[in-house]
Amino acid sequence: MHSDTAPARVPASTTGSATTTAPPASASPTDAPTAPSAPTWDPQQYLRHAGHRARPFLDLLARIPELPTRAARIADLGCGPGNVTALLTDRWPEAHITGYDLSPEMLHRADAEYAGPTGGGGTLEFRHGDLADWLPEEPYDLIVSNAAFQWVPGHAGSFAPWINGLRPGGTFAFQIPGNFTAPSHRILADLCDTPRWRARLAGHGARYIHILEPSGYLERFTELGCAADVWETTYHQLLQGPDPVLDWVKGTALRPVLTALADDEEAVEAFLAEYRALLRAAYPTGPRGTVFPFRRIFAVARKEA
Image (cartoon, rainbow, N blue to C red; front, side):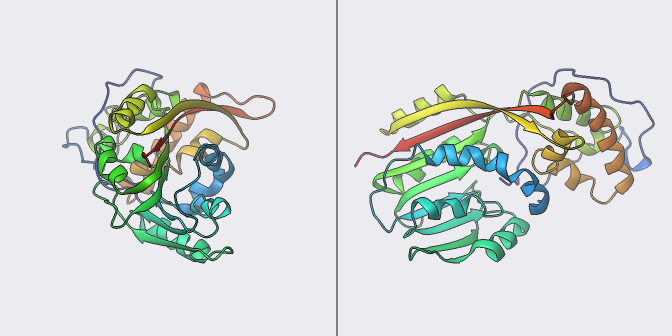
């Protein structure tokens, strides 16, 4: 779920008016835009909505067929804080599982909470790995990923070598958000591109146009000779608490912005105040909480045995 490159943008649509207070001196709109850098991740913030974030992974696991070997070799690409990686041990307790991630903060949390032997005689470990150039170093029974490929432009180009790294009858499976035209993301992109913030944040709310539609993923896998199961689901999540959509995106989509403004607390608060007001209008609170629809795309590709 981590990135060191900024994706290309789709032109932003207008979703609301940003306030027009004067920009801070350090964010002059005449300055050259700052290129997005790798975001800093906050495992605690990410896990504030752990139940909603884990549910799609459980739905994905339910569609993965039996693996070629009992003591399976499994890779989790973009493992984050390790909480969903650990769920793999329930289904495959004898497996040797490695979670890969780019974030030191996430890997530290995963190591501290989950690394070690499993109850069924398997092992769970975590390693630093950049999904932009990760390649299987040994045959795998399962390569899986949960909500990570949106941070990897060109990820579909890696499908062939990843599937080549599977044992015969092995599976490559992933879940990826498909909600980048939702108000939460449109508003973020628009706000980053306003005169007040453009110099410091242009591109930090970028559209993830490298994500394919389900039909695109199905085509890629069938071309690679796999038996493929591809689908999409929109989860109508009922979030609780004040400004819950803002709280959600603080753990994911907002990380590049928070990282870019990390040395300027006043700018962080100013940006959050604008974004909060726009999100409140887009996602009004109801009598039992705030509905936050979230579309996700799933794919399970099985290599020929």
